[in-house]
View (cartoon, rainbow, N blue to C red):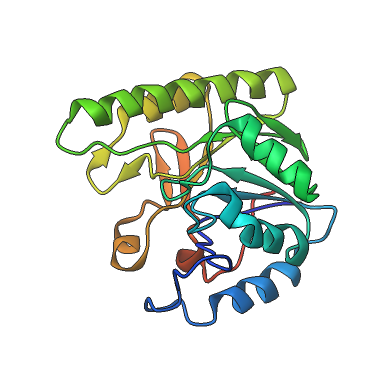
Length: 228
């Protein structure tokens, strides 16, 4: 089986308590119980960004250890906007190898095949007032999404996109991202990032032939959802 969830916002190795926010009380235990009640070691779970509040790679060892040791299954991580510890692909891969976190892989300009699904994705970005810096990041993220989908095509499974930022929110659409989804005939896109009041504006349904689903942790009750 394949499951997905985003925004764990773990802070086991740093002083950044997430449970001070409404709805997040005892969230680590709730997450562990929900996750392990359904996910087996033979399953795959895609985590859609904002995994750890740690600022540096060496400080997120406890959070990644929790993901590896306390949560069952194979975990594939997408980068989120708060994952400032995520530097280069080589550094994060070397880090998990050195610590023996063998159940963790990273989705970055690549793709993975599981259960007939080509798991593709990227962080994505938002457009704020048309700032040139945001446009530059958007262009780069669109390129990463396309590179991931191209890798997914070679794997031969159904192309399913996992993106941290919502491609569509309210009346706003990140056309650079949605056009690539349409180009590769992606039918399903899972996203995260939204919390609290902003969840009310999330798109959970079809738009332009693509089915979108919000899977941020507090948006789905800290309970990974099955996608196949």
